[in-house]
Length: 238
Image: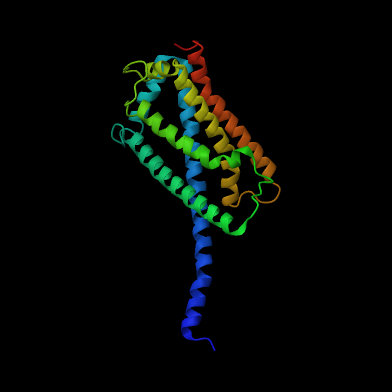
């Protein structure tokens, strides 16, 4: 006959998988929501970068405009700091969730699988983790170069336009940026589908549509972000 202690132990053991599943779902939702925040940010950032084609005055006015956005309701530069805090918190959540889910996936694979199967896996899905790490490294480099101005390429410039042109006139800076943008495109291509699936918007026959949307968005971002550096490197913008 089972004792109260046995019943309690059985109940706790049964509850652990349920709690684990709930935590996993919460982490996936956190990744999906923060991923959407990042996509909205990079689209806005891409639009701003394209201002470089309008000339130095237009690009510098855009950069200065970000600092006065929200005035007089917000102090000078407050909008940028709010955006930075939101992005930083989102990044911490996204990285933590990705790392935790990856550890769980590796642990589960080691216990349950002898042969690793990737029948429907795409290149984008297989490189999500490494691509994410590459993007994280690039974000740190990008902030040091264009936000804190710790890394100066080609000299010190007061004009944001001059800093951008000087940086992408150097081939290896262009190469780093190009690799990062390709990684971004691959990350977004799979991330769109993954986020929609997590949020329950990928049911029925929507996968082909979402796959197409992911590919289209990835291409828009890669082409949009690489257009200014290519033009600068080729001398069309100087």
